[in-house]
Amino acid sequence: MIKYIFYFLHLLFIFISFFLVFFYWQVLILHFLTILSWYFNNNECIITRLEDKMFDETVIDVYNKCRRNDYKKNNRRFIVPYYQRYPLYLLCTFNILYLFYKL
Image (cartoon, rainbow, N blue to C red; front, top):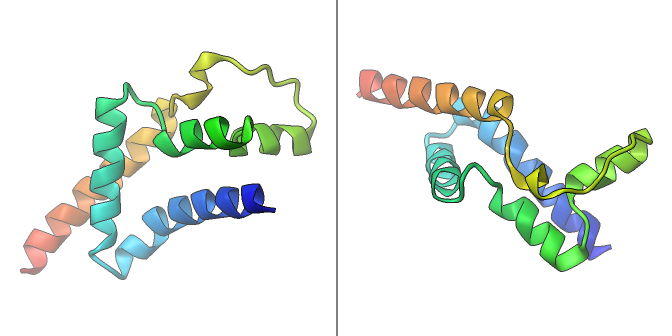
Protein backbone atom coordinates (compact mmCIF):
# COMPACT_ATOMS: atom_id res chain seq x y z
CA MET A 1 0.00 0.00 0.00
CA ILE A 2 2.82 2.43 0.86
CA LYS A 3 4.42 1.67 -2.48
CA TYR A 4 1.35 2.82 -4.40
CA ILE A 5 1.02 5.94 -2.28
CA PHE A 6 4.62 6.76 -3.13
CA TYR A 7 3.94 6.17 -6.83
CA PHE A 8 0.84 8.33 -6.64
CA LEU A 9 2.83 11.15 -5.06
CA HIS A 10 5.44 10.86 -7.80
CA LEU A 11 2.76 11.20 -10.47
CA LEU A 12 1.11 14.00 -8.52
CA PHE A 13 4.36 15.99 -8.50
CA ILE A 14 4.63 15.53 -12.24
CA PHE A 15 1.06 16.76 -12.68
CA ILE A 16 1.64 19.72 -10.37
CA SER A 17 4.78 20.74 -12.19
CA PHE A 18 3.01 20.94 -15.54
CA PHE A 19 -0.39 22.33 -14.68
CA LEU A 20 -0.27 24.36 -11.50
CA VAL A 21 2.62 26.49 -12.66
CA PHE A 22 0.08 28.69 -14.42
CA PHE A 23 -1.55 29.51 -11.09
CA TYR A 24 1.31 29.53 -8.57
CA TRP A 25 4.79 30.86 -9.16
CA GLN A 26 6.13 28.66 -6.33
CA VAL A 27 5.95 25.64 -8.64
CA LEU A 28 8.96 27.12 -10.40
CA ILE A 29 10.96 26.09 -7.35
CA LEU A 30 9.95 22.50 -8.04
CA HIS A 31 11.00 22.96 -11.68
CA PHE A 32 14.32 24.39 -10.69
CA LEU A 33 15.05 21.56 -8.23
CA THR A 34 14.05 18.94 -10.76
CA ILE A 35 16.22 20.40 -13.50
CA LEU A 36 19.16 20.70 -11.13
CA SER A 37 18.78 17.09 -10.01
CA TRP A 38 18.73 15.96 -13.64
CA TYR A 39 21.81 18.02 -14.38
CA PHE A 40 23.85 16.65 -11.48
CA ASN A 41 22.65 13.05 -11.93
CA ASN A 42 23.16 12.67 -15.70
CA ASN A 43 19.45 13.04 -16.51
CA GLU A 44 18.40 10.40 -14.02
CA CYS A 45 15.32 10.79 -11.89
CA ILE A 46 16.11 10.67 -8.18
CA ILE A 47 12.58 9.68 -7.21
CA THR A 48 12.57 6.75 -9.65
CA ARG A 49 15.91 5.58 -8.29
CA LEU A 50 14.55 5.87 -4.76
CA GLU A 51 11.48 3.85 -5.75
CA ASP A 52 13.72 1.12 -7.08
CA LYS A 53 15.82 1.04 -3.91
CA MET A 54 12.80 0.95 -1.61
CA PHE A 55 10.41 -1.31 -3.51
CA ASP A 56 12.58 -3.00 -6.16
CA GLU A 57 10.10 -1.62 -8.68
CA THR A 58 9.38 1.78 -10.20
CA VAL A 59 6.23 3.51 -11.31
CA ILE A 60 7.33 2.83 -14.91
CA ASP A 61 7.55 -0.89 -14.14
CA VAL A 62 4.04 -0.87 -12.70
CA TYR A 63 2.73 1.00 -15.73
CA ASN A 64 4.29 -1.53 -18.09
CA LYS A 65 2.92 -4.43 -16.08
CA CYS A 66 -0.56 -2.95 -16.36
CA ARG A 67 -0.15 -2.59 -20.11
CA ARG A 68 1.43 -6.04 -20.32
CA ASN A 69 4.44 -4.75 -22.22
CA ASP A 70 7.59 -6.81 -22.43
CA TYR A 71 9.68 -4.45 -20.41
CA LYS A 72 13.13 -5.53 -19.32
CA LYS A 73 14.77 -3.85 -16.39
CA ASN A 74 18.06 -2.17 -17.18
CA ASN A 75 20.24 0.58 -15.80
CA ARG A 76 18.95 3.15 -18.28
CA ARG A 77 15.42 3.04 -16.95
CA PHE A 78 16.20 5.86 -14.51
CA ILE A 79 17.13 8.26 -17.29
CA VAL A 80 14.43 10.75 -18.14
CA PRO A 81 14.04 10.82 -21.95
CA TYR A 82 14.69 14.06 -23.79
CA TYR A 83 11.05 14.27 -24.95
CA GLN A 84 10.02 14.46 -21.30
CA ARG A 85 12.80 16.82 -20.20
CA TYR A 86 12.48 19.44 -22.94
CA PRO A 87 8.85 20.36 -22.23
CA LEU A 88 9.82 21.07 -18.63
CA TYR A 89 12.76 23.19 -19.77
CA LEU A 90 10.50 25.17 -22.08
CA LEU A 91 7.76 25.56 -19.52
CA CYS A 92 10.20 26.69 -16.87
CA THR A 93 11.83 29.20 -19.21
CA PHE A 94 8.48 30.53 -20.38
CA ASN A 95 7.23 30.98 -16.83
CA ILE A 96 10.39 32.70 -15.64
CA LEU A 97 10.14 35.14 -18.54
CA TYR A 98 6.47 35.69 -17.83
CA LEU A 99 7.21 36.27 -14.16
CA PHE A 100 9.79 38.95 -15.01
CA TYR A 101 7.45 40.50 -17.55
CA LYS A 102 4.67 40.65 -14.98
CA LEU A 103 6.85 42.45 -12.46
